[in-house]
Amino acid sequence: MKTVIDRVRTLVCCIAVTLLAGCGPSEQTVNDDVSHLLKTLADEGARVSILQIYSGEGDSENVYKVLQFDIAAEQDVEITDGLFLGLHMKAGETRCGGKIELLYQKEPSGEWTLRWSEITKWAVDPC
Image (cartoon, rainbow, N blue to C red; front, side, top):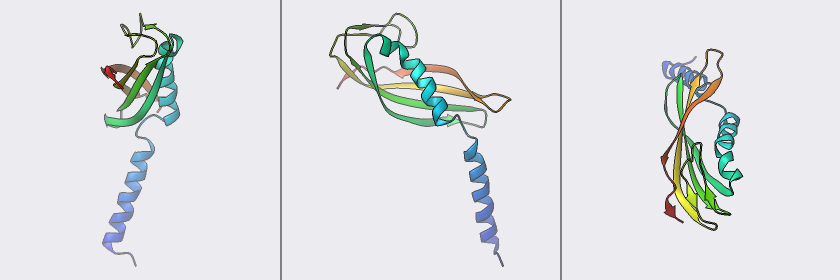
């Protein structure tokens, strides 16, 4: 016979599994979106090292993902549009400590869509 404590534990576990199952975009979705955002840098000769992607604040309809990164220029880089507008680096230069925030919103269909991205900390520190 289950005790009240056992029933509460079971209920809490069921609720946690249900909430965690639908609480944000899939890892593949985030990776695809990040690749698209960083494509401009790759096209211009910069190599981005993604250090970490983690979840920030959010609720059932909005989820923030945070990406920490470093940049290394394989050739002179000058970005003239997009998320990294204004970035200038010389060949061989490396910068550390960048951070990008991504906002995902849940569509009525249940799919998660990237709605907004912003560099909240430029990778300015030499490595």
